[in-house]
Length: 182
Image (cartoon, rainbow, N blue to C red; front, side):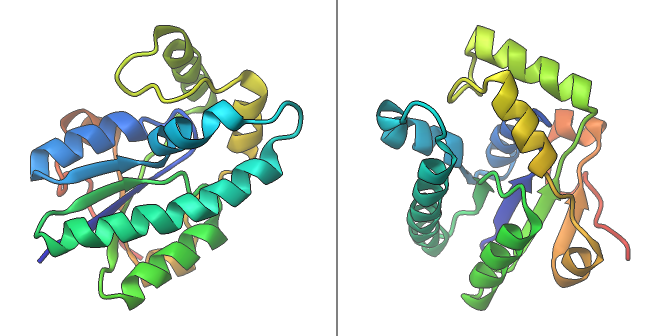
């Protein structure tokens, strides 16, 4: 049976690196929202307060990514979705939506200390290596970090949750991050 892997965590937690490795290890398709967003919308980003502009486009992009994901799942391949659902309510809505369509997700949560994440993001901004999609300025990093909501008991009870350890991040195989025990 095909599977949806949802990779979530705060900015700089290692999601892109983990997602890429996981997709390779399971012969799945990695779909990173940031990459799609940068290609489609970054040239039109307004100056000043871009948050309302971003939120509207992200919602449309989530719909498009899910439509594309269903096609991939229908072809017999797993999808590894890296969607930046940093707030619990948006994650719950998305997970319930795809579960109702017959694709209960396996959610992999990654995290790292704030200073480690901040340094990773600054390095990624400078190096523009394989996981780079767009520059994340310090003020955006701080705002997104404050908005991050880890899973609560309800989310852990409702969905298959895996907390990815630093060791599992390096190996990135699906069963190395053991399931959450309530």
